[in-house]
Amino acid sequence: MNARPLFVLAIALSACTKGDAVRPGGIGSPAPAYSARNLDGQPVALSTLKGKVAVLNVWATWCEPCRDEIPQLEALHRQFAKENVELIGVSVDGAGMGGDVHDFMRDHDMSYTVWLDPDKQFSLQFLTVGVPETFLVDRAGVIRWHKIGALAQGDTTLASAIRQALRS
Amino acid sequence: MKLLLHIALALSALTVQAQQSTLAVDGRTSANPSISAQGQFVAVAWSAATTSSMDIFLSTSHDGGVTFSAPAQVNAVAGDARVSGELPPRVALVPRKGAAPEIIVVWTAKSGTSTRLLSARSLDGGKTFGASTAVPGSTGEGSRGWQSVAVGPTGRVFVLWLDHRESMSAGAMHHQDATMPAPKIDPTEKAALSQLYFSSLDGTNPVRITRSVCYCCKTSLVSDGGNVYAAWRHVYPGSQRDIAFSMSRDGGKTFSSPVRVSDDHWQIDGCPENGPAIAIDAQHRAHVAWPTPKDGKDASALALFYAVTRDGRTFSPRAEIPTHGPASHVQMVLGADGPLVAWDEIVSGTRRLAMTRIHTDAAGKATFTPVTVPDAGAGQWYPVLATTTSGTVAAWVRQGDKGGSIGVARLR
Image (cartoon, rainbow over all chains, first blue to last red; front, side, top):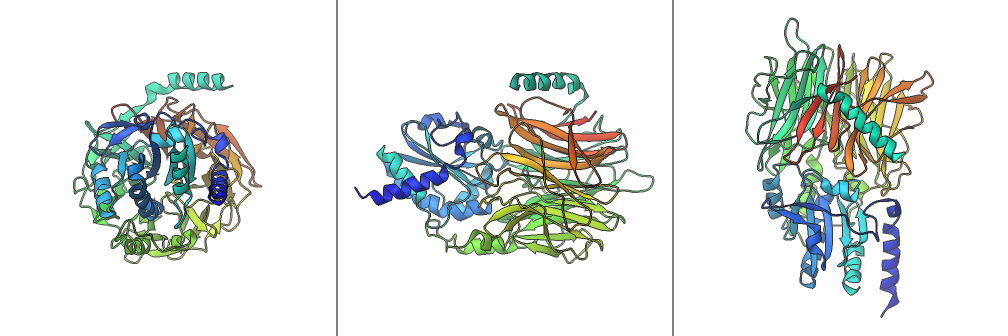
C-alpha cells in the first residue's frame, strides 16, 4: 500500500481535530443520540444507521456556502452509495418549510437523503457552530471526521475519510 | 458548582413563572419573535407555521407587556413568509399623537426560488394590516434578508439587509448539473458578492453600504436623532468573519467607511448565524455585543463580547461577557440603568436564556451584572428585548414537544 495517501489523511484528520477535544461530538467520541424527521414527516434516528458509514451534513436552503458544496456531496453520494455509505443532509430550515426543502432538492439535483430539523436539535447535540458542518460517523457509531464550514472545491479529505472508515 | 447553578436556575424559574404571557396560534409552531415598545405600548411579531406553510402574526399590549391582544395575521398572501432565527420578522413603531403607534412589520417572503423583503402597516393598533408591499430596492433576482429596522426622528422607517442579488446569479451558473464541480473560487472573493443595503420604506434608491458581508447573520440597526448606526458580520481577507460597524450622520443618505469592531480573526467558510446587537446611550455612545470563539478558532465554543465607541471610529478593547456555555443570538436594548444584553446559551444539554446589564465607565471599561431571566427552564432561546416606560420586556421562543410558543415577560 502506498503510504502517501495515509500520510495525507493523517494530516487532514489532525487538522480537523483541532479544538475537537473539548467539544461533545468531537472526533473519537460516540455520535450523540440524535433524531429528526424525514421529508414525509416520519421520525428518523441516527442510531438506525449503525453498521453503515454515515455522513451527516447540516445545511439550510438559505445558506450560500451550503449551496456551494452540494455538488461535491452529491458526487460523493453517487460514488459511495453502493458501499454501505449513507449521506444525509440535515436541513435546519424552519418549521413548515419541508416543501421548500423538497423544491430545493429538485432544483439542485440532490438525490441523497434529507432529514428535517427545524428546532436545530443537531446543533444542540453535536454543538455545531453554524452551517454547513459535516460529520462522518463510522460503522460503530463513532465520529471519525468533522468539518466546520463548506468543503472547498477539490477538497478530498471527506472522500479519504469515507474510504478509511470503509476499510476499518 | 454545577449543582449550585442548577439550583439557582430552578429557584429563579419558580419565582417568575407567573409573570409570563404566552403568544401562540392554535395548531401551529410559533417561533422567530421580534419586539418593539413605545411608552406602555408593546408589539410582538413572530412566525407561526403549519406543517407546510408559514405566516407572520402580531400581538400588542397596552399595559407594558402584561396582557396581549389575540394574534392578527400580518402577511396578506397566506403562507408566503420565509423567516428563521436570524431573519425573523422585524417590528417597528412610529409615534402618532393621540393614537396608538403605527405598526410596521418587515419580513422575508418567498419570491420564486429566493426571498424578498415585504412590509405591512397597521393603523389600528395591530388589529388589522394593510397590503404587503416590497421594501424599496429589495426585489429582483437573489435573496434578501437578515434585516433590521429602525425609526428615524421624523417617523421614517429604515431597513438594513443582506443582499444576495449578485451572489445568487453567480451561483446559479454552476448549479446546472449538481455533480459538476463549481469553478474554484476563494471564499473571500465570493463573499464580495454578498452586500449590505440600507433603505427607507418611503425611499426609492437604496444605499449600498458595503460588500463582503457574511451571508446568514442578522444585522443590527439603531436610529438616534439624526444618526443611524449599523453593525453586521463582515468577511475580511482570509474568510475571517468579524463584526463591522458603520454610521450615518445625515439620516441614512451616506454611511462612514466600515470599521472592524474587534480583531477577533474568526476564520470560517460557513454561516455562523450569529449577528451582533447595538444600543445607543444618552451620550451617543454605541454599545456593540457579539458572539465569536474566544481564540478565533472555528471549533471553539462561542463566547460573547462587548465593546463601545464614542466617535464611531475607534472601539474600546473587547470585554468578554460572562456566560455558562456556548452563547448565541445576542440582543441588546438601552434600559434605565444602561445597556441590557440577552442571549441563549447551551447549558447541561439544553438551551437557556441569559441576561446581563452592562455598566461602562468613562474610559470604556465594562462591568457586567447578571439579570434574573424571566424563564430559567430548559428549551428557551432567541430572546428579544424592548424598553417601556415601566421597564424592559422580553420575548423568546419556548421549545415544546408539540411545537414552539412565544413567551413574554416584564423583567424585574
